[in-house]
Image 1 (cartoon, rainbow, N blue to C red):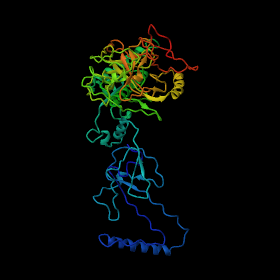
Image 2: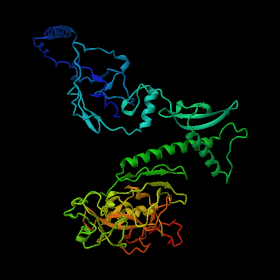
Image 3: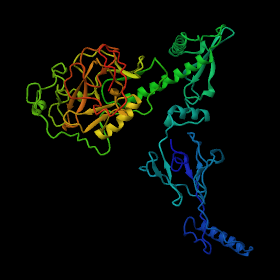
Image 4: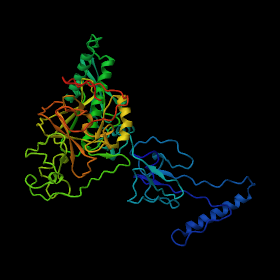
Length: 539
């Protein structure tokens, strides 16, 4: 959706009305060229001469100001298809004319020339300028619309407009689909539900009898939400149906609506995460604990995002030429370490030993047994809301064998100095997302607070089921290893995934750590893992 007045010039369904530029004082317009428009040009010349003659005979007045070019008037060749809230245009801005006031004609008037069509290669969106028919008129800026798709659809249906780009056509303009149920009442022994229609504003909500509703899933969700709310407040002041059981209390209906909106927001977020991911495993989102929605300042990424001034070289300088990396001298041997995996794709090296996988220079194919971390998460995981006050967490939806690769820890790569500054802020908020890359030196840190993947939501535990390993694939810079999380034991479906933020559990002897910089009187974060061996603090 373009900004106000931006999409119209050159947009589909619009044409520009020509403007007559007034002649400078003291000059007569040139006669038209001989040919098709010669007679029209001579008529215009005679008319201008007569006009100037009468103007000369008129009483002298104060000198006129130089004429300002009249703004382009946009005439709708057909009704507009998408609603826009247009601000009041300035004196020289393009102002759209009402489409109802413009008759549709087959050809332009002899004295009006149609606006030039925009060049096919000229983009209309994405912060670019769109040229208008008038070279003297200011160019309009087209910017991406930040309004959600549902809001645009509601506006279109409210104004009875069609827009194919957002899925509103003449065929489905008047379609009604139940989005969620808002309220409940009983009238004359007949049950009614207040229905929110998908793609329609709240002002169009209607009471519908139960017999007309063919949405068993939404009815079940409505009943579950009502029951959950009543069970939550049962310990305190009971909030139940009225004595006659004919209507819901306003507080119950309000909670049900909030829960329905939260469920829709989480579903959109889940779809967005699965669109952005590049690995095989699916991502699911659920919250059955509270009304918390998706995080507002989190962006999903699949690999390291370097901060300004940091360069990540993601191209290996050499690779192996093995036909069977299990028995030949492969990349790990060139680096002086052992091959990290067995034939079951399980890690066999102790913690603290680096992993060298085959890279883009290697001649082995994608089925090489030494390509595990680079393939990404293979398991379906669920981001869920924890009930112990730890916020969001991650659980597996399938069984994970011990010593198997689970996920990679990614985020924004920053310097240690910047990590120290951010660490002060994070400690005051009680959050920890800084992971020091101190395999060989302590120059860089991974910050997954704003940019990250599923690992952003993995909680800490003093008795974790995930272990950290340093991995080198295309980038062989020992200052910038990739961080891979492997299972330390068999993890059953539905079990939460955790790792030790201080990397002291599960017999880890590596130097990897999270935020191991000097404390400098920084606030300590209380640990809520609940493990028997809990240390009490995260830092």
